[in-house]
Image (cartoon, rainbow, N blue to C red; front, top):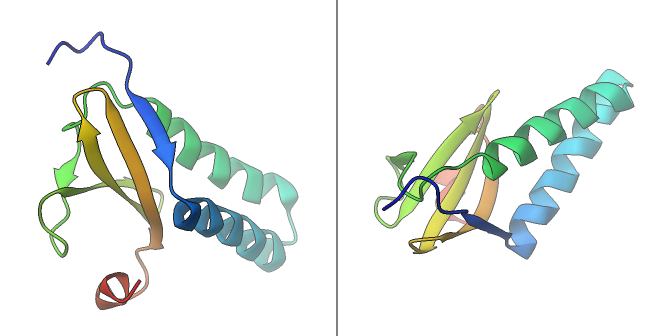
Length: 104
């Protein structure tokens, strides 16, 4: 795999909903749109900065073919679709118990 290939990042409906819920939860808890926006931006930018599809570790609870990135305390679960494409499946608050991940 050549690191200069552009990785296409696609988001599942579930992941988009998770991101929206995270934004709303942070905005409500902190009363700060700026804080919520910063977290959302960090998550999106991290997913855009993948240089190769196997850059991050295999998720320890889900196993292959699921990989994970961690941004702040959020775990981003993705699956390799091809050498140049990944699909973000879910964003999981790592403060929650990992068994809840399997139920979704």
